[in-house]
Length: 594
Image (cartoon, rainbow, N blue to C red; front, side):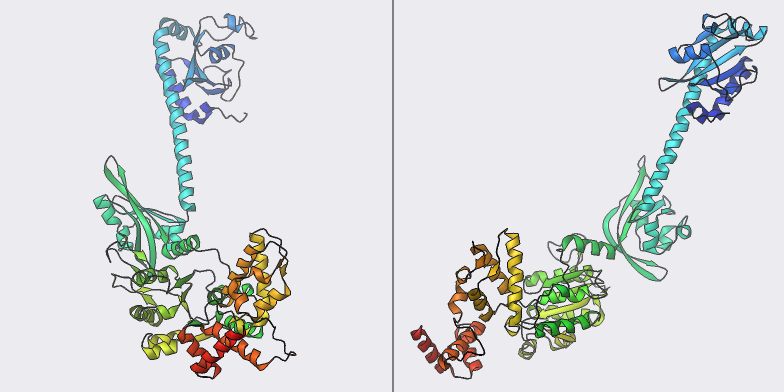
């Protein structure tokens, strides 16, 4: 028998039962064909009708074609039977063939056949009753087909939903109306550290008592984005999740809880909200011994867990070093978050760093908010301008360093964290400790591994390299064909004192690229302050200059470093080893000569 795939063969058992039912009621032989004229069911009265056989079926073909019943009281003599080889000698005495419809389409034929005189009499005497009965049987088969298809769709959908739930990255936990677990997907099992077999059928609040699903079932009210500590087998798991009651006809039939590991959420949020900065030690440009020595020290401390205090003037690249240390540490796959303690208003800095609970202050988000320390768990937090942190926050930071916990504003429960702190400042913290503006205990906690970044004036051989790097960078951005700097421009930039260090040099080159319309940057393309304060003769070891000119150069450099205010001039005089009155006299003389 050939393999069959028609819709009637999908419900063959039901079709056979219908055929037997018709025979038992009418005492007539029944054959049911599909739309390919293949016998799907037969009650056995006719030896020519075997299940699986495909028949010539001229009358069956007509019913399939017209979707109308055919009453044949003269088998072998009917006009439709003329092509048949049994024309005039058919063993059947009479038959009625009725279309089987499903959703308006003819999917088969049911034939009632009389092989004896008694059966022929029944067919002839009750045609209307037979038609009504066959129509109902046809509807019954159609319903069976619908049920079969619906069940297949249900199982297909159920299987698809199961695959979908199991494939989700977030955990899914479902309970029935009594709180018994009916589903736990793979991600949920992994997050909780519980196998599906262990939890299925168990009352969930007995296994996870801190999970508020019992309230969801009783009060018919869910929750959204709620943080929760779940104690599982003696281990605390922090998750964030949503709970929804499942209702049917206004009655709770269960609840579903979808959740994620809070650490994963925080890492994801960090990647979404942070700039794409992949800084490494390879990003630090320069060839000077001072810079190379600093990089080597930074690399050695990268793998450590210890706190680092980066010291250096403004613009030396302290954050670049901090990011590079993080990128070469075991924490590189976790968050790096930079906070400028001087840039955030004091009343906001505490909530930004430590977070807050619901109702902690007016304007607080309803469900509270984690601080930067929590969101950086596992990673590195960079506290720039640490010298500007208010004293009351220094106390909280000290607790973080000592206990590795944070406490949100309005909260009393310490939250454990694993964060490496890298702090930075351009201020003299020792002096601030003596003045009482910086806590001594915090200073020594931060000063575990100090790292000093040399200023640009102490690594002059790096200036030409940085100049070329920046000019190439900005020329590409502005789509300009610039080859570099003229000799005079390069000398001016190399001899400048760079009080703003690398950041100032970068800004100067960006300015010059905007100003230039030629291939080479000339001195007139530089900001006026550089050309005004630069000393024309270059400092060559082989060139002997007059003492008066050298003195003017030293005074000029000192003024660039300390400024021209009264306090700045006092520091210049101190640095040059002269009194303030002498400095003013020399300045007056320099101004006369220029």
